[in-house]
Image 1: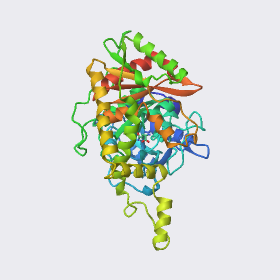
Image 2: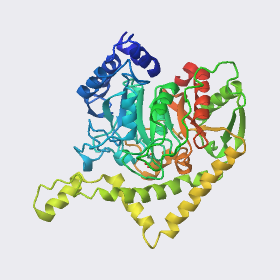
Image 3: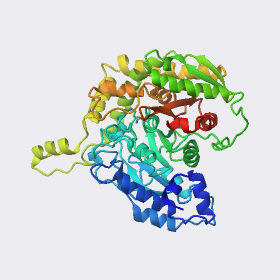
Image 4: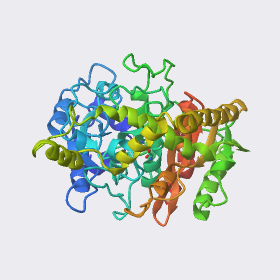
Length: 487
Ligand code: GLN
């Protein structure tokens, strides 16, 4: 089978073929490595991949015990964001302060991938410490959009989104604090899932804002993403914020047939996510998707989440506050700082050239300010109160009988690199995604069409721990849209 053919098939099928001996155990890895070299290398490359471990990945493929054990990802290469700890490659969070850092332990999600038979050949580029929406904030240079190199792939998990969109891997891990998997998935025309807060272990995910962070999954299709989440989900004794709720079969509805597979499913369209200012062509694509949902048997209703407009102000108080506390550990003594000059002067130069970049510095300053004695009540305390109201909006709407919400993922398609100079403009990229992190509910983005060749994402949100219903709707919509999702 040719390399392209391997990469164009669902990961689950390729893994099954590898287990059955119909495809060589290293074939998917070889195809992926060739595609990576073609996509990443050179001055015109995507710059999506930061670190590789070809020998380790090959050794892992060779060592797979195919006749024992259940290996749903046998021989499947998975790309991993650079803020998830691996022992076989550096973990730098896209930051100079962690240059050369190799973790002495591995994240639980990495252990779970390996146990499922996955091979891990590459770590991907990201906005420094996952702060950003474009992958322009990396100390290792910007990542380019696979379909248009003048544009950004979104962020902060832009490297993982770009490798999946470029066909280098079928599945990749990213992280989500306010939209960093869904937003780049929408920009790149792939599927991106943020699980319920507590669904997936955060042990070994470098902390940004601990009450919001979750590991997320990219897939070329709904099934690739569902399979990836299936493998990494579940409680972990090493992460006390992970929750012991049974993990259902996310792929159960992949073949649910009949012409009304969404009979009995109530889909809410929250008016706050469909503002009059929404781009007209984006609205057309969203309307087409809604028509498909209706045709599939879903009961579609207008609903309201009245505190939605407060999500960005609340997010940009809560996330920096938690970040300023989490990042205090990178003090330049234990991490990163290599002083070459003399005394204070050398120390100053080292901080400037090897410390945090401007966005991370801005967040630390902002976070320290909102937590300071004089401003704590006015900012942080109020933000926490409003965060509760945003959560209550979701609780109420799901209690009213709505199963999933359908919205745009982002207000625009992928923008041109360098075009968002004002940080506030960049922050608005998360206007439709940050709410799910604040409320802790699961959400995902899937491609629903294109505008001028650039992908548009539709977002599904569900109630806590109900990823299964979200996938059920996503599978049906993906099938109903067919080629329209990418045209
Ligand atoms: N873009 C948002 C931020 O800059 C979200 C980032 C994320 O989800 N990691 O904070």
